[in-house]
Length: 126
Image (tube, rainbow, N blue to C red; front, side, top):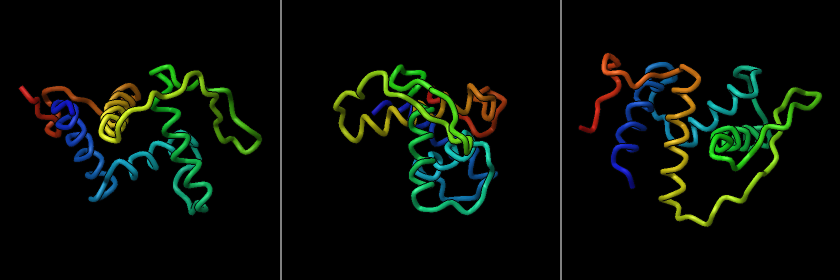
């Protein structure tokens, strides 16, 4: 695994934990992204809705990589995506790496997080 991605992900995780509390893991961050993309804020979601939120997060994260394309929203304002290409068969470790890298890119692109030198949450691996 790319050590730099792991360092960058841990800095992002620490940043998120300042706002959302400790114990943030990949699953929790996926849920957070799904809720953000849905745009309905925090509420009590059913088990099926939670699964859908994770799916929304995965699609959103992998859209820039060309795996999904946003199609639109339904009557209840839930986003829908179509598959553009299959995700190649990769190991769990490679999958975690891809998701972590996509999460970093997502938070930076949406200006929710910065990796600038003046950000105390980010320490360069150099």
